[in-house]
Amino acid sequence: MDDLRFPIGKFAAPSSTGPDERARLISQIKEAPVLLRNAVTGLGESQLDTRYRPGGWTVRQVVHHLPDSHLNAYVRFRLTLTEEQPTIKPYDEARWAELADARGGPPEASLALLAALHARWVALLDSLEPEQWARAYRHPDMGLVSLDTALALYAWHGRHHVAQVTSLRERSGWTSQF
Image (cartoon, one colour):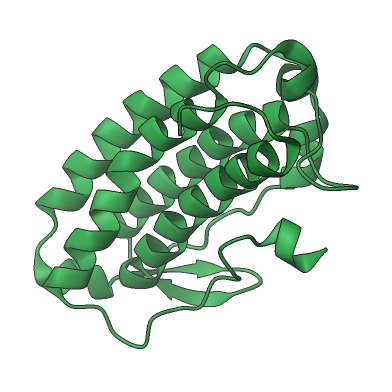
């Protein structure tokens, strides 16, 4: 079950991040919307409403979850760049995934939102000075989280959810363009 939930493995925070690693992670943030769109291209309604694993979210919920999560991440970055160690507000992602728009809404709205959001986010990330990456926000459960760690987390997060969809497609034998 863990393999289905974490097809690329669980997140591990990097011990340190330099300019080359940041560039690689920013590239992953940049490509996530295209990879997600490719992962769901050609899926029918019943496929979108298939759970990627027993007890997990549907493909549709995964698609809607990514912009929900990454909108929160984008705001966390902006708060961290404009305030001293802001305490961020977590959200109940499981309950968000049960709202009507996430359970039944068309994926296109979230795919377009993710693409626009990531374009802005990458522009912000590319503008950061080296010392800004050490800035941190306070997460009530995780403690202090540096922007370096947050970058790694959300780069992983996009790949993680895309892999949930692509691994379901592979297991199910659904033709794909990913």
